[in-house]
Image 1 (tube, rainbow, N blue to C red):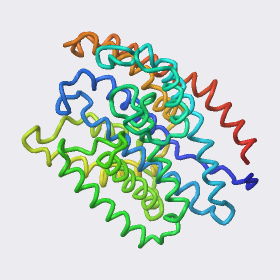
Image 2 (tube, rainbow, N blue to C red):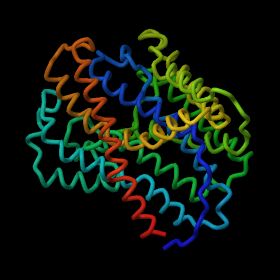
Image 3 (tube, rainbow, N blue to C red):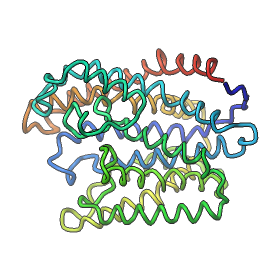
Length: 370
C-alpha cells in the first residue's frame, strides 16, 4: 500500500472546462454519425479528433501533476492513483452497456439475440480490465475491442500512455523528449496523409492496422502535451475559455477538407490540428484567467461532467443507433427530437454517475489503496 501523501495542486480550471466542451461535442458527433452516408458528410465531421485533444490534455495535466513529485512517488503509487481516477467509470460504463445489450437488437445488429448470456458475461469481465477483445469475441458486430462500451478503446490507450510515462519516458530530458515527440509527429502526419480515408480515425479493433492507428494517435498528443507543459510557461490571457472553446468547436465541426478527390488534404488538416492547433488551445487554456464566479462554476461543472459523460454516453447512443437503423433513410430533420432526448439523457446519466457512483467510489478507493 502506498501511504505517500501528496498535496493537491490547483486545477487549471479552463482546461477542465475545455475537457467538458470536447466531451459534449463527442456526444453530438456520435448522434450525427449514424445519419451520415459516409465519412465525408457527417455534420460534426471531425468530432473524433476530440480523442486526440483528450490525449494531449492528459499529457499536459499528468506532467503538471506528477513531474516534480517522483522523489516521493513510486511507479506503483502513480498507477494506483490513475486507477482510482479512471477505473470506476470504466466499470460502470461496461456494466451499463451489458445491462442494455440485449435491448439494442436491431437491423444494424441483428444477431444480438443469439449471443448466449455466458459469453456476454465473459465480455463484461474482460471489459472491466480494458484488455482488448479479439475479433472472435465480438458480440455486437462492429469489430470493436470493447463492444459493451465503444469508447473503451481510447481508455486502453490512455493507460498505455500512462504506463509508458511511469516506466521510463518521464525520465527523458527535454531535448530527448523533443526528439521523441518530433518522431511521433512525423509518424502521425504519415498516417493521416496516407490513410485510405484521409483521416486518423481508428484504433478500436484488435488488429495490426487499428493498433498502429491507436498507438500513433496516442504517442504524439500525450507526450507532446507533456513536453508543452515542461517548456511553455503560461501567461495571462483574457477571455481564454471563450476563445479556446470557439476554436475547439471550429476544428471539431469543420466540414471535410478536400472531398473524395483529395483525401490527403484532410489528413494534412488533421495533422495541423493535432500538432499545432490543439497545443495552442491547451497553452491558451492554461494561460487563461477565469472571469467571475459564473465562468468558474461553468468550468468546474463541465470539468466534473466531462469524464462521466464520455464514459457513459455511448450506452444511450447504442439505443439511438438501433432506432436510426430501424428507420432506414431517416435524416437529421426527422431524427433530431430523438437525438435531443438522447443528448439530454446522456447529460443526466453522466451527472447521476458522477454523484452517485464515481465520487463515492473514488473516495473509498483512496482510503483502501493509499
